[in-house]
Length: 93
Image (cartoon, rainbow, N blue to C red; front, side, top):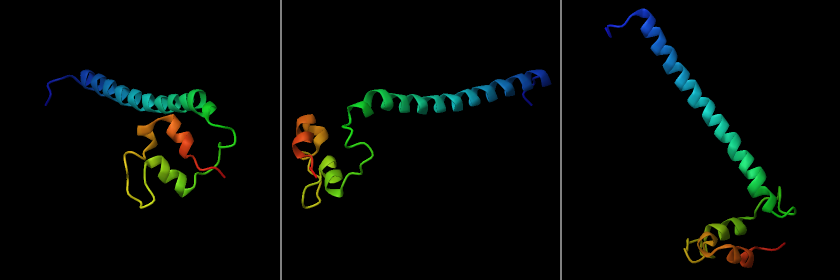
């Protein structure tokens, strides 16, 4: 046995439960914070015409840096090239 009284065991169990519940609550709040960040900082910068529009396979592959042969090329990856590259390679409909 742990050589503790029933009161001490119950108190410790309640403290552990409170810690678990607090951690779970923190994750939910974190998700809400992420959504709020996107709502305030990311979505306003997306052109209205693009909101809700699905990307074509060609656009998705261009963003990921895949070339016409389907092979990833770090020189084609827009994340490595910056925003000017993104605008230059964007497929227009």
